[in-house]
Image (cartoon, rainbow, N blue to C red):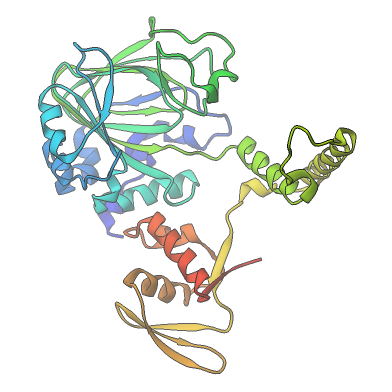
Length: 382
């Protein structure tokens, strides 16, 4: 990783307030940091990110990775744009959101890996969004389930922020004025407002970074044509999710509890209740006895199959040596690269590949490892 990229970090984005992301208190308040655009040179020096039209032209057209929000003078609606529609919608005043931009702008991947490493989350958790809008464009009042670092690159944008007093740590986002989605309806402590009343108002200029934790009510208005790049964490780990998955896994192992039921079948509800209660008590006892609960490091480790060594001979060929045989194989370049890397390692998490090889897409690495396990060249560590 070159020296310039190594200068990019959380402190680049949030300055002296970066330490707040390492405190034990859950983050619920937005942070706005203003500074010179030069501090975001690692972003602006990427050729495809020098203007809205350049990144829109670079978009690979993947289905449902671009959303276009209606102009502020029209009824609110959004559509999933195609390549043919994108520039036309932008020029007609739609606000354009491109998602997973690191997929087609490889220069962003090392920056994502740096943030993941600093935040202590798995490789592939940080993705990049790009917001493009002409003067008068608008981001309607809503809240998200994600963490986002919104970097203003071109133009000025007015933000209005307010605390969400009805819902802390939402598991889904939504636009205000709509009925709550079922996923969050049962979590509400009170009715959601239809709009933001009062709140903090400020203007983001080129070089401004606005950090939003989940749930903060916010809306934006473009004072000029605006171009912003956001690092987002859409799916975050929660203790509730890890424990719920563990309970499901344990109960699913009991044949009597996973058996399909018809309403006409007689059931011993008492016996089933006792079985479930016994398993839940066992899980609770296990959690209490742990110094480090399983959700702190729940990812499986993998390794090159024991007794096997791998020597890369070209981009698409590798020589495998076992106790009694030597075999040359022609494989996909990603598989060859991963096998060569794994041969120099012991046990590792899949995310380690992307952390040490930042230009590799983490999702591609994960799929590659799954395939190598399937064909017997790698194995999971018990």
